[in-house]
Length: 211
Image 1 (cartoon, rainbow, N blue to C red):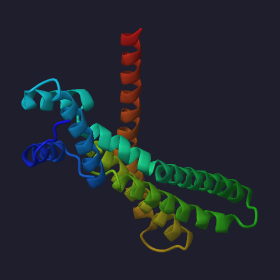
Image 2 (tube, rainbow, N blue to C red):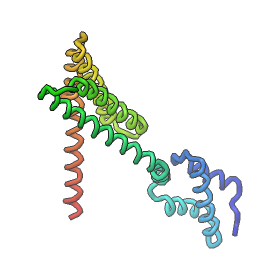
Image 3 (tube, rainbow, N blue to C red):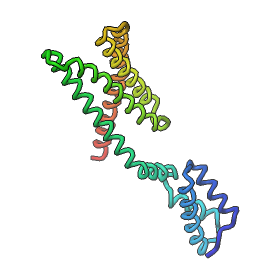
Image 4 (cartoon, one colour):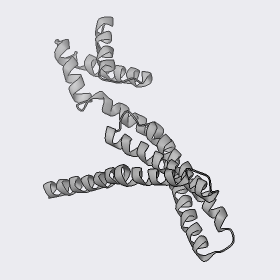
């Protein structure tokens, strides 16, 4: 089997890097894969340029970044699963404490003030976890999605902190709650529900086309 020369190897590697593959191990694996394909084809054909282009069309017809994204997903699947479990767990605990504190407070049962105090802290912590998870995908997310995430965190921070201030009768509690609710109602919720609506209509359009 004819071996590729250094210039040809460099040409292939430069193409891999130019297509956005940053993982070194994946670069080497793809390089070996392309080389084997090209060397095998060169046994029957003499035109390296033609075989070179054919290799990229056959092996990565949708581009090499797709392979890198799939590799990243597989390598980080376990971490993503753990993060989702943490988010859902804290979300459940937060909603549980909020609903329970409302029940205790309206019924004037003992321990109501403690539950009311814990609930805002859980809101802030849960929002911080969501923000941290979104920051890891900041560049790949759209501007609108990033705006929603940041606004949601700031809203939760203002509302949670404002409730704590109100509970201890500190100054500024009402201002924080009003600011947080305004951000929630005027920015976060419209973006959230518009995104859900758009996703639903897009899925319906795809279903109609396929049927």
